[in-house]
Length: 275
Image (cartoon, rainbow, N blue to C red; front, side, top):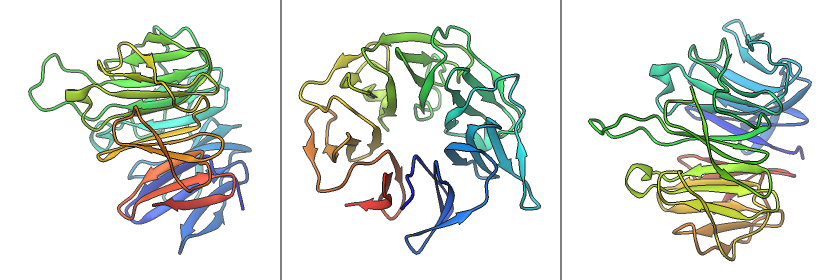
């Protein structure tokens, strides 16, 4: 089975991607489909088109005739390892891309063109991105909060990825981030590192503290209305509050996707459903 690093969904269609390529999930089976990147690492369907990120092209997207088109990448040639759509991207057209060595790029036209947005960024090894939910109508001051995980810490942007500020230095690379659905009232953000443990913010992502008794290696995180999922290198864990974690009888995951059917996980041996 192929290694799966990224999952995305549009309507009832689910795609999975990893080093071996791009796959369409049909009847819980992975069916390989062509894609152009030599080193694919992430995928995203933005409601209009399917995008893949990786090496060679940075980002490429599907065209109406069934082909692929390379996105314009503002001179960045570093591999794109994560893609994150604005929570209202159908209206805004905004997608962020994290490049391992190139920092953060921002598209405002649904992925056709990406422009460098590294103002305030001191670490260009960007490994993860996560948007906060949309701010409630009428809230002040208006913010579009989004977080970036890099080799040395967590960055926060209040303006939709146009500018960044480091909010936490970490002892290990930040592989994954998750923002609580009730972020604008509870303020919870989790950051998982590669050997430095799990870190938590309760003030909207301004400060982070280490979560006691959590796994030291955190490869993937998912925030749900009912709680959180986490995977280390050996298994998946569940928590109702993001502080106390209970192991589940599932193999480890490298990525999660919340669907109407449940949570789909991708890992070293393809995909599986998490009970």
